[in-house]
View 1 (spheres, rainbow, N blue to C red):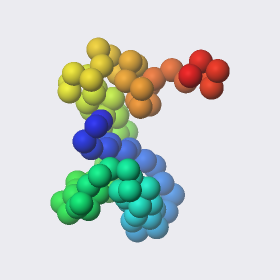
View 2: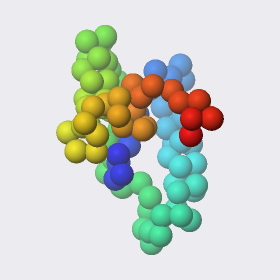
View 3: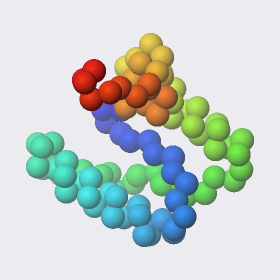
View 4: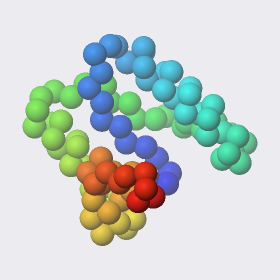
Length: 94
């Protein structure tokens, strides 16, 4: 998505061990190229840290996969370059 990120992860460590470092790294890497004179991450991001069960995980996965379609960025989830359901491309296909 051009203006936000969805990430559904199943880490084996607590969020403080990976979420803060992930946000810090991405902000550090993106800010010089973004042209922004404000923080990269919004102060009020939505970090939902618990998925209750398998059906909720699948519901969230479906929502994330369909988000670019609903936003009009692709006709199907498979067509969106950054989707987890996009078929892998070989480096030669570039």
